[in-house]
Length: 383
Image (cartoon, one colour):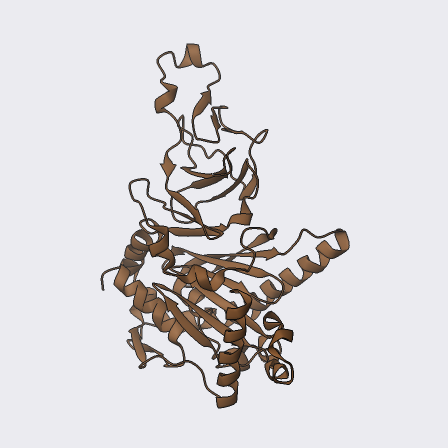
């Protein structure tokens, strides 16, 4: 958001604080426990949401220079995204045309000499446009090979508003503006184009990916689950809320937000008194705080297991080892809080859901983000 929008957001949050309330959904939602536990529903979700729907990869700054790449295979399709020499992006199925080995198994890095990928199995080499340019022992071993037909399989990749999306299925396409639904306006000005990628942490969780996502979409639990961490900094059960297509955004107020009432608006520093959870359907949250932003991507492994990738982006590359360590320590602390407090509790919720007792899960009017996620999921898988 630009400054004018941030100031308006602060006013909305102040009003919620003054009235001791939060933005409400129209009604209470109930969902069947089986939506978290059913193997059949899981299979439908895996196809509809993670293979046939555009996936958020990350902000543009995750691959800033020509030759920079990012790869992942959590949708079931190994995906390789690379910044081409002309600054555009290419995306490919990360499978060598020879015997199917991945061209890289690193999450991110720089292409060989900044301009090619060589398969680690037999050395078949491709340029940044996915063209097969070298085959060791090719004339003798593959005398009739048509290199023009053996390039990497392309995937649709789109980069807009500082965000990168890819379609895992090579036979499907998407409209990036439809996928975003207007949420790009909410997220402008937060540095998606130019921030420094500090790194990523991977955490495996033994519960449904949807239980994982549920924790991000409401602030109702702050005072109870995080009394000494988040609850000591921000108001619980208080959030602004706006929907953008299948996505949504929530604003949170710090406990000190009313200090701004004593200052003229032109002296306000809105990001010091607010933070934002931006949901990109189906599995991504972009968490914007005062001086940086974080990206959380959650992928299903099975009906009862998931993996979380937690990435952090800061305004500038640390100037020395001491500053680097300060950011690393903060990053680790945030991750540790999530693992110890959120995931520890959700693991117990998962065990309760697995008990085989037929019942519904109740999502309150004060949890519109959770409601929206489940509503969009049901619409996408045709229920």
